[in-house]
Image (cartoon, rainbow, N blue to C red; front, side, top):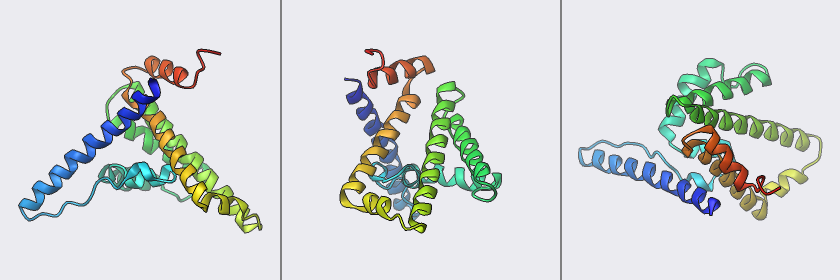
Length: 183
């Protein structure tokens, strides 16, 4: 039941956000203004970075332009980039509300973006050293579907953190989702 609730919330938040921005875009068109698209099928993203390029594009762009890049962006050492991602996403979490669960949601996404960056660097290194099997597997049709499903589930886990009223409730729900209480 908890997985159904988690999936239902994922689609509820998408339909709410995407729906009201579509209404705003349509209303703006009535007055001759063209407002850019704000959601671009984010649940079909193949990785967490792509998700953030497709989800709430105006907010994602603002976070990139006014937090991530001024912090140093992708310049500097690998650890500086990870720190910039973590700070940016943590502040993005707090933007949603001054609550610990929003901060943890932001930290979670910062960590996921950092892990994706590490994975991408490892994939590049393997390809440069003649080990193209990983890229071939990921880029295959099955790999593409699995990447999309994994990304969707990572985002859904994040939505548990976002939706729960407290960190304790989120932790309890995550334990139950992964059957940790029954072990």
